[in-house]
Amino acid sequence: MQFGYLIHFGWNRFAALKLHRISSGEDIADMDEPWRGSSAWCSAMLFEPPSILITDDDHGFRETVRGMLEPRGFRTYSAADGEEAVRIAGVEPVHLLLVDMHMPRLTGLETARRLRQINSRLPFVLLSAALDELIVEQARSIEAFSVLPKPVSRQTLTTTVDQVFQRIYGWPERAAS
Image 1 (cartoon, rainbow, N blue to C red):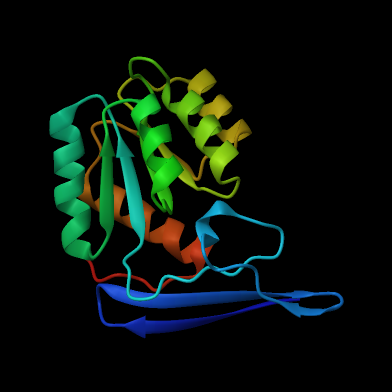
Image 2: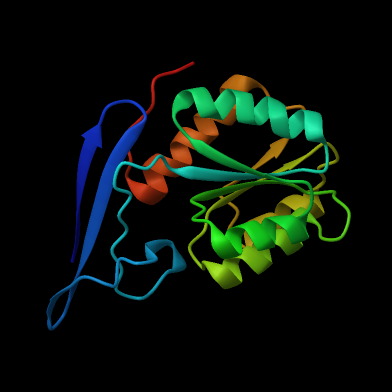
């Protein structure tokens, strides 16, 4: 049996606490690093906005996406390639990965796989200007939340991000921007 609690503190800051009932009773996992993942977990974000790691080799695209998401109350991290994304995710809490497919060093799918080694439940959205059936199939096979073609509209991107936070974390809908 699962149950959760959500306390909302305004548009930009909220705390979420999800408790999972264990057959032997209730258990709350160590809250020092809730984003690291465990079988019995409790995620708490006290007065901190959810964070999104934007990974794309196009600096202009990263900054455009950052400009869409930060005014909506998200904390963003930016990585120019997959290796930088892995370094960031190793030291910062990341709740969503937005990743381009075609980048130097690691592809978007390779990046998602490596980040899933850090946090097996990390949702990701794959973006690509050169989508084909094989890429979509590979993304679905490793459980991408969504695959979006580039260029992507503001509405499509923000709606997808909202859906991730609603479905995966049960966090409230954000006002449209």
